[in-house]
Image (tube, rainbow, N blue to C red; front, side, top):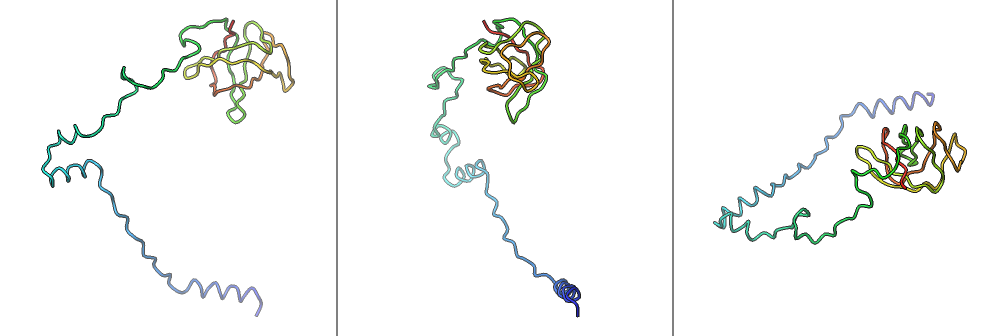
Length: 163
């Protein structure tokens, strides 16, 4: 017999026998906390008001007596401190690079910009810019530049130059 026929026969024998059924353990469902409380209340005959009063209260962060430090924002979200420069046309999430089309003014390395959009609002210093994969120090109106950004930006966000 050839090797191929032997292999086929062994496969046929393997698939002829019925497979053993594997017994699976049934999962024990846990009762929700509200059901447990009711059961405790019924067994001990304690009113629900006492149970509520005895549970410790957690202070919400919105309360006046909250001990959480207030975060200071560097810029007010409503105020736009500088002139409009351009729009973000693309954003590459993996490498955190935004493509900006300059519509007004110019940018140079070392300038501070503000990226503002529907869900974004953050300032950033420009360390380097690229135009068609070439580093440049100055970009003018009409050019499309690539910027490494600190946070995520979205297509359509506005870019402003800070003074």
